[in-house]
Length: 530
Ligand SMILES: *Cc1c(COP(=O)(O)O)cnc(C)c1O
Image (cartoon, rainbow, N blue to C red; front, top):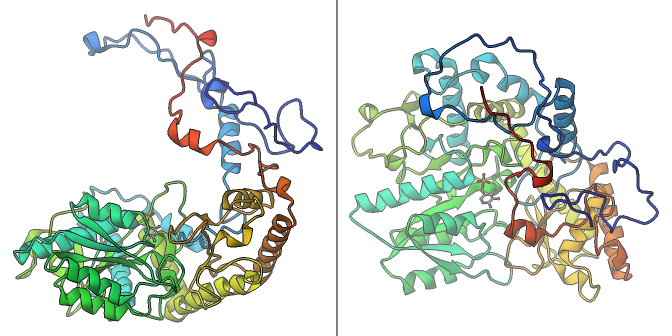
């Protein structure tokens, strides 16, 4: 395969299907090749006409640049085309079904976007005095009210910037609570099906992670929790548990688990990433949860992916609320109360500090509240029910052909398959997922959770229609039957129709090329600055 100087394929892959005629440009109809800005840019053009600079004496002294910087320049139309072509390469929920389990890729209503762009919300600066942004503050307070009401909790720290950041916030509150009680327990229990951010968070705070095995049915056995507590008696800081769990199953013994942890003086951190399955149906506060992050970008429909902005407010129980970071919002007699600074603290409140300098992601807050208010309480409950229904529709549509590691039982908002249906076909989970790309589907979450072999975690979300699910199921069935008939050519080396074929992902991860270097042969001699 011919590669450019950055180690990226510069021509259609050799595995491209043979019936396809190579084109002169390398473009495939309207799927266009797009080099880097540095590769198409030149030194001798400029997108704007600038006046000649008047004579001036720079005050930079010896820091003044000796040579002009080697930056690419493009004309305005070239620049536009570059970015518009790049934007069209992005697979998005607006383009098709995005069944990425655990990520809740649901439709992002345009109403949210319209609201988030209102100048009073879109243009606020984090350093503006509170008195100039009272509307924004009121909106955050109203969102906080919805969050504590929906979860049945006492307070909420709004500022964490994503789920993982929320985990850190919640666990820091737990640590502060232990310290305030003069304790210093060292162990955090984490089920083996947990998302990697859970053990990472505990480890970052200096805790030792003790894993709890899943039982036959994919859930956590309170007896196993009790056994671990006994082994580490007096040293349990808490548990980090996801519910519904990452196998798409509701932890039915959650109350018994919470009681066991509380009896051991520990706290219950719930990973709330899967809240979409239970909004309006169950309140984490009633299940014994002490702290839980809510991924606003998942459950409440703000666009995510590609590392885009998120928000991970953390709701806290009465026991943990006094340790919330500033600023936080608590349930007061006249509604939600803001606590901005130490001066507003009540007796016993001892925040562990601040998670971020500002209040958080305004755009995310507006979108989440717009979503909540446009659905209403009944609509939110309906969305959860539809999400669970859709996942079960997919499960039932595929369970005779694909293998369910925990049997044919009801799942929550996502359905987990393993790779035993691919046994002896020579096709792996990875091959299968790549062949889905050829069919125009973003693959499901693969190889997570780790508790099953070759995991495939499918989350359709509530926003897919029945016809969309039917087509997805039919496509999956066609792929499974093709694999089982031994048509390995369809899988090995897939995707064949994507602009790039199968990439060497290991090499890309191990030796990422993160910086563009001008190849020696094309070196431009930067002119010395006058
Ligand atoms: C997404 C997710 C997280 C992390 O949330 P981010 O917002 O991506 O930081 C944690 N746990 C589970 C189960 C998740 O799905």
